[in-house]
Image (cartoon, rainbow, N blue to C red):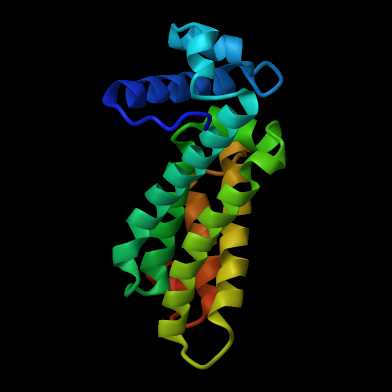
Length: 203
């Protein structure tokens, strides 16, 4: 950011700009995301916006950092106290947490994943994945110490769950939410090993 907000008034102005930027990006898309639109949405002059952000690149960088951090907070908060549960219970909770986080603003998710250049999200998305992978690694290491690499399996699981969940939210295929959760639970529990996932799901 061009100017770090120190006073309460400045912090409120930054939040106003960021909120407006998020609205414009989700509503109008990346191609029409310009600072004048954001200023209009925030009800301020472009000059007021430029006091804190030099250009739309700086504003987009903050927007993406906030978006992925908030998404990560929602997922990790739902999982942090469930790491002692068996896969049959942990995985549905993990999938539900991920779906809720992605659905929180599905229109913005679409713009972020399909329109915004990767350079704006890459670092922040990597940090989100790292947070979830670390939780997964800790869980897997506790279940099968000394066996296959927990970090490798965690990377595979996080990549698979992320890709499938994003596709489901954006494409809305003819698959119900319950069906998706059940199938992903079977897939993950079978991959991790342990109890037969069909038993915990009532198959």
